[in-house]
Length: 173
Image 1 (cartoon, rainbow, N blue to C red):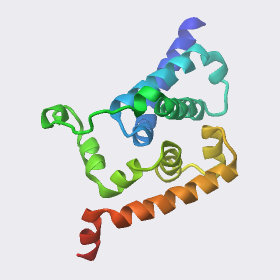
Image 2: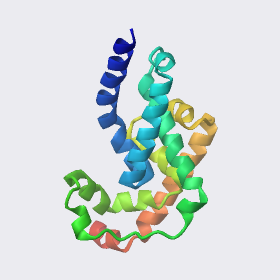
Image 3: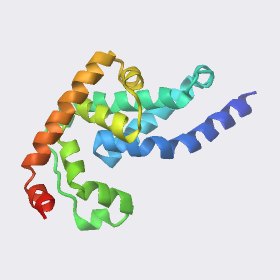
C-alpha cells in the first residue's frame, strides 16, 4: 500500500512541477525563490498526501501552498533588506532561453514592480487563466479583494508601462 501511495505522489510530482514552476517563478520574480517555494509546497503535500490525493484538485492545493510560501517569504524582514540585483553574464550561462526572454520583456519588468499580492493575482489570472473564485481560494481571500487588487494591479501596470522609457519609443515606432 505504501509503495502505491509513494508512486502516486511521485507521478503527481513529475506531472505537476513543470506546470507549477512557470507561474511560481512569475509570482516570485526569482528562480531560487520559486524553486524553494515549490520544494516546500511539495514536501508539505507529501506529508499530507493521503488527504491531498483525495481532493478534487491536488494541483490547486499545491499551487496554493507555493503561492502562500512566496508571499510569506516576501514579508520576512531579511527578504526586504538590501540585495544585489544585477546578474553577471557567466551566471546566465546555465539558464534556459525562456528565462532570458521573460527577464528582458518590458511588460515583465513592469509586472515585477508590482507588490507581491498584486503580482500573484496578475499571474494567476492572466498566466494561469484562473477565475476570480479560484484566485480567491489560492490566496485565501474574498472575491472582492481579488477584484480590487486586480484593478489596482492593472492601474499600476498602466502607470509603470507608460513611464517606462524604453516602451514609449517602442510603441511610437
